[in-house]
Length: 361
Image (cartoon, rainbow, N blue to C red; front, top):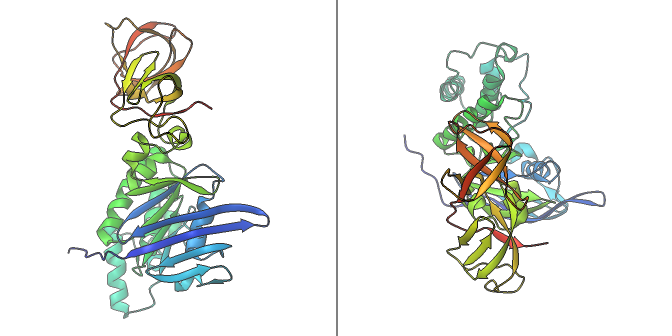
C-alpha cells in the first residue's frame, strides 16, 4: 500500500519562547515540518530541546510565540490545547508501559474508535510492523529493553496521530542496539507515513533517523539543515565543533578561495567569509580551520611527519591523534592494518576538498 502524504506543514513553531521563572530556556525558536518528514532536535544537555518537545506535546505552556499542528494553533501565551486533544503520539525515554497490561493491551490502550475487531486488527498490524508478531500476550517485564521500546512505539502509532514525538527513546539501550533500532524506527515511521520529531544528544541517532536536524544551544536553533550540510557546511563554530569529530588549527588566508595551514594549502569552492561584514575573505586574515579525521591521510611517502600521541582501535580503522611539528594536534582515520606505536612518527598528507574556516576568537 502506498502512503499518500499531503504537502501541508504538520508542525509550525513561530518565535516560541519558554521560561522557568526569570530563566529563559527556549528563546525565539522558529521551524516548520512538512507532513511525512522526520526531524531531530539535537544538542547537549540543558540546551532546551526537551523543554521544546514538551511544549509541542502540550505538557507546558509557552511564554511567547505560537505552535501550530496541521494548520491549527495549539499553543500561544495564556492558552493551549490539552495534550490528549492534539492528536500527538509520544514515545518516552523510560517507555512508560503499563506493567499490569499485556503487550496487546498496551498497544491498544489509546484506541478509542472502531469496533473490537478493528482495534484487534490494528494492534496485530502494528505488532507485525515493529517485529513483535506473536508476542501480544506477554507482559512488559518479560521483554528486553529493545522489545519494550518497540511496544512503546507501536502504542504511540496505534491511533494514527498527526505527529509523533520521541524523547531520547534509545538512551537506555546499549550502543549496538541503539544504532540498529534507530534505523528500524525510521523505516517504521516512513512506512506508516508519520511525521515525527526526535530529541537526542546523540548525533549518530540523529543522522540515522532524521531528514532534517536542528542543532540547539542556549535555547536557540543554531542551524536547521540536512545531516550532510551540518557536517560539511556548519553555520558556526558551535555546530562545527558539536557535529562530528574534528579539531581547529590556525590558518592564513591567501585569497578568497585558498587558505594556508601547516599541512598545505586548502582550496575552497566558494568564497570564504572570515571577517564580519565582508563578502569575501581578505588576504592575510587569520582563521581557524576545521579538519575532520578523513581530511588527514596516512601516507608513508609524504615528507610531512607527525607523532602518534593516542590511538583508538575501531575494528576496520584506527583513529589516531597526531602531533605536527609545530605542536598542533590533528586527528586521522587510518585503515587498521596500519598499526603504529605511540611515539612513532608517520607520514601524513592533506586530502580535503573544501574549507570550513571561522574567524579566530
